[in-house]
Image 1 (spheres, rainbow, N blue to C red):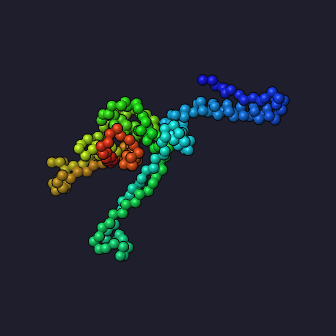
Image 2: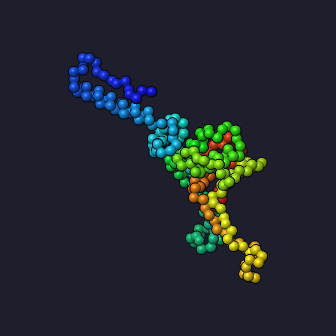
Image 3: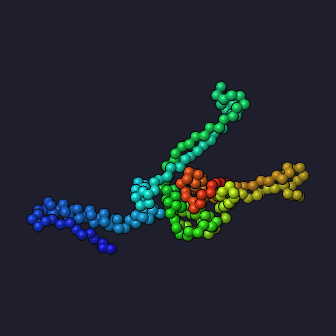
Length: 234
């Protein structure tokens, strides 16, 4: 591919006009700069730090037909506890659950992760449990939609049953620190089966909750039509 454009030029009868020639020279300079940018921009490569903001959305809409997804942030609040409401707001012994939904526009990073989930073909076209686990881990750890090494998949569990598929993300692990095992403590100092533990959260899975929201919102596609539930543990 050539590095230079075919330049514009004046008709011969206008070639002695300095103003028109300056206009043509400026036009050629701008056109050359635009051509150089288009040649090196890698417009189809959305992953990474090359594109952001409205430019990213314009490219993904034009090349992939994808709009920036909107996540639904759902919150539930329970009412009914004593001394927690204004007078006459709720009947005595009544209980009410109020659900509120808020639309949240996705960031560039999350948008790119969604695109990689829906368009990445490097895992092949044959569905397996490791195939699905790799995609989940790539979404969780691939910054700006980039591919990552995801051969350690113990933190993602996939279970199929008659009710559909269940995906569980282990967002940390719990370490047992103290127990009521026989002969490990003084008599009557612990209750039966008492145990204490410490939860260590995984810092690399900060997008686990967003993954769950995107899945429940139908933003992330699956190669089958069974119901899928996502649970974040920890």
